[in-house]
Amino acid sequence: MSPSRALVIGAGIGGLTAAAALGDRGWSVTVLERAERLEPVGAGIAMAPNALRALDVIGAGDAVRALRTWSGRGGLRSPSGRWLVPTTGDRTADRFGAPVVLLARSTLVDLLRDRLPRTVELRTGTAAALTRPGTRGRPATVTTAHGEILHADLVVAADGIHSPVRRALFPAHPGPRYAGFTTWRFLAEAPAERVEPHETWGRGRIWGTQTLPDGRVYAYAAAVLPAGLRSRDGERAALLRLFGGWHRPLPQLIAAVPEEAVLRNDVHHMLRPLPALHAGRVALLGDAAHAMTPSMGQGGNQAVEDAVVLAQLADPAGPVPDALAAYTRQRLPRTAQVVRRSARASRMTTLTSAPACALRDLSLSAVGRLAPGLALRALAGIADWCPPPRTYAARTQSPVRH
Image (cartoon, rainbow, N blue to C red; front, side):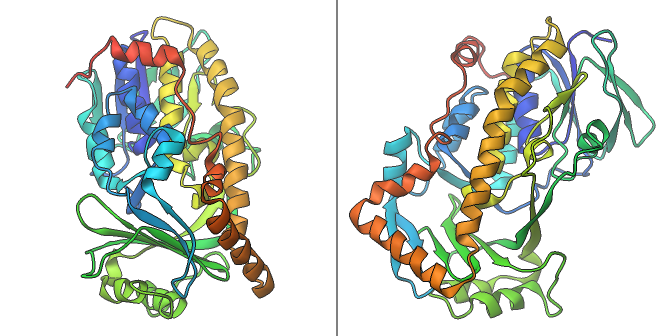
């Protein structure tokens, strides 16, 4: 076994970032992806300032920043269309030192794949299972669905919210639980009228519309519903029932989108943190480690943070168990806090009581008029995160390899 071999299970945003960062540090990396092709789950994603600074570590931050489209007006609206908390993309950039960039998940995956060093092998159509987590003196072992047995000094489990690796490492942990609401997402051609980026909050329902760099619109919605439901007449019909009476251009976007383009998913999160983000020679990252609600848009951002911190700590010539213990110490408190804050934010957006919603909207409107910058405090301590300085130093001395 090569002393610097790493296996990454899962080629999502976190897995690809980890592969690029570990490759830049000198690891020989193999990425094992179950799907036959890299077709990311989901439609769009918001990369916040903290994730952009993390992406700088692998030389991808500026490429994402160049795709920024939101600098003008946007904010929070009521179902009638009234602006509750107007803001601008520039205000966010000024507050946190970098913008929020909205882009298609497929665009980000392509960009990360292009940043993989030559030492990274990407194998699609290769389901894999952890068979032995390894110890200080023995490698970890992974078995593929083809019967291949692979040994590695480090295994990175980026295998998603229902992670088999997490269940194998921590079988007593309850795992993700239903957060009380379901979501819909789709990409659509932009309507003729101008679309200002916004979220709209109603009673137990929210809607978001964002314009992407390629001119399409990313729309997402959520509603408080029992878990496991599906609409008998299709998800587009369900969206029209829930949001068809809200302000323009919501009904027009829903009416124009093909049924097959609408994705529906129940939301699960892990309010109870794992006891550690590692075991043996295996590290968990992203949703596998700390699934959270999308209410603060931090799921993918935290996965990117995980990846660059893990790569900084995991010296290919050093003791991996010690590096993974340091990874847990650095990442577990922060990610547990982000999970909790996301859960609190989701409670605000899923209120169903009419008086509670009226009070919420009145408070938000007052904040929008009297202290518009106050709304950005929700991201304080999250969006202003920076990678440790040593990571930046290492990256500037090691240019991206193609």
